[in-house]
Image 1: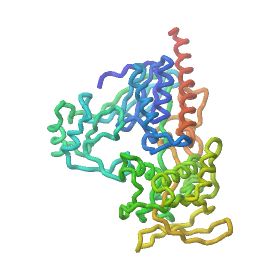
Image 2: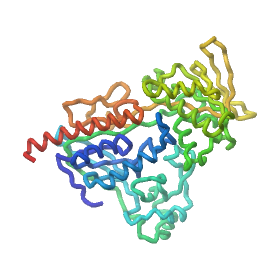
Image 3: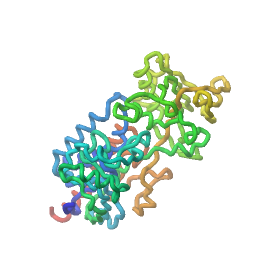
Image 4: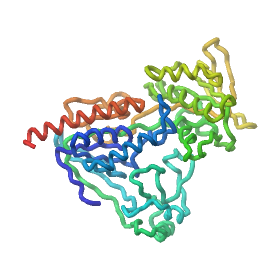
Amino acid sequence: MTDVVATNQTILVVGGGISGMTTALEAAECGKDVILIEKNPSLGGRVSQLYKYFPKMCYPTCGMEINLRRIKANKKVRVMTMTEVTNVAGDTGNYTVNLKVSPRYVNENCTSCGACGEAVDSEFDDEYNYGLKKRKGAYLPFFMAYPQRYVVDSRIKGTADADKAKAACQYDAINLNMSEENLTLNVGAIVWATGWKPFDANKIQPYGYDRIPNVITSVEFERMMAPYGPTGGKILRPSDNKEAKDIAFIQCAGSRDRNYLKHCSRICCTASLKQTTYVREKYGDEGKSSIYYIDIRAIDRFEDLYHKAKADETVHFIKSKVANITQDKATGNPILHGVNTEGYHRYSNPHDLVVLAIGMEPSVDFNKLGVKMTVNEHGFIENDPSSGMFGAGVATDALDVNRAVQSATASALRAIQVVNKVAATEGG
């Protein structure tokens, strides 16, 4: 890797999702030097894994394409993928940051021709598709990945498959001698745009995610709907690959519960309302969506989505916290058990498929990382105006895409103010 030049007037952005990309671009387009790091092989984050996002029901590929074009055109942004922070020392305006860069085993000669992927036989769970399908040991993370460069999985290094990948490449792009690198940077400000991870549905034992095949999560449903996803855009039951037309959506799956996540993740209700439009998109009047909810929290401009769902005769609302889910062994149908609090009727309702609207939790535990950030009881960053380190996007709270971008823009401004003070002090 070429030397990375950074000074105390450089801004480091940690995390290459929509918030990190926004922060980096806003700062760079104001003339600041920015290093944007991402631990995965590609930029894009969780938003790139969505089928559509609300309220306009846009495809994320559009926004991704615009942001990538801006990054490619701006020489002030240096992108480093497969890179993580291992230590931070120093103070506002003068941080020393240690980075670990994992080997990609593919250099910049790569043309994404795919020959290496075709040559190898080994397969692994596809992280981008939440393990709903397999990917090869040499792979492109997803079709709009940036950098548009393949990755050789470290688990095949030293095997015959690695040799096959190298032999198949016409461009001398496979370099199996790459090794982990450790870098030290000096930067003036740090923005943590480390995003979120879906709550582990395995922990919600009554809902049977770990043992009932036709219980999936809301993030898996998004990938299922994507044309390039694991099912090619079809809503298929994992148990038998049959189309699912009667779908239950369970709200607050693990959220607002002292046993799991205490906080409300804010987006879950709207995400399920959005996903009922997917069912209508696929099946028209033949589809059926049932939303089991405690209360619907679709506020501000999202309330229109709620009213549209209420007006759709294929969408049904059941006011209830589902008690547990069992499986009909004959049909494979999940059966939801609980009490409808509007009338207090007990129910045992079978459905083709159940989608758990799981909550958001921070992807980074700053206490374990050893970085002195102020976090609240849920692990989200609380920004300190006297510091030179800030949170952006969902690292600071459970937010929808629009609010995450607004947060990122605000954090870019905070970071710019820090390095401007450094420049003024040093007469730069």
